[in-house]
Image (tube, rainbow, N blue to C red; front, side, top):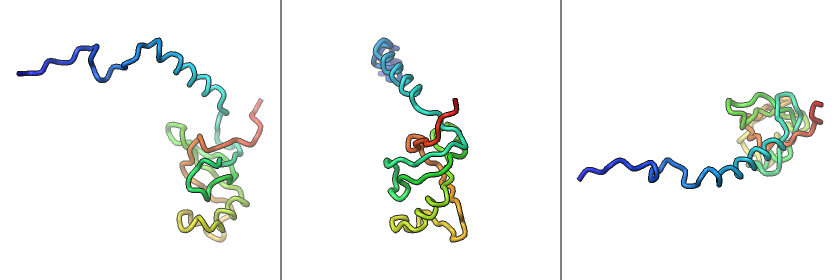
Length: 122
């Protein structure tokens, strides 16, 4: 016996909640996004303590270019943080930093793990 096409009410791709229940969540997400600082290339910041691996925690530097979606950024470490990462025993061989390299560029740091330290432009 052939199966009939699902009706729109039973379609698995439709949302099970009415739009009135989705609106408060969307509004909360929008309010949260409005409160977050704008991360742009050239701003100084610190990598938060929530990132893994732990050897990257609390390193400071300058935000570089974003990825296509703006969810991850390249991060150019300052000289002190580059030296700290180079000498960190937990680093192992993951981040290989040459002895003559002054500033090391980390690729794809999540935006949620970047805390801006410079004052926002007014």
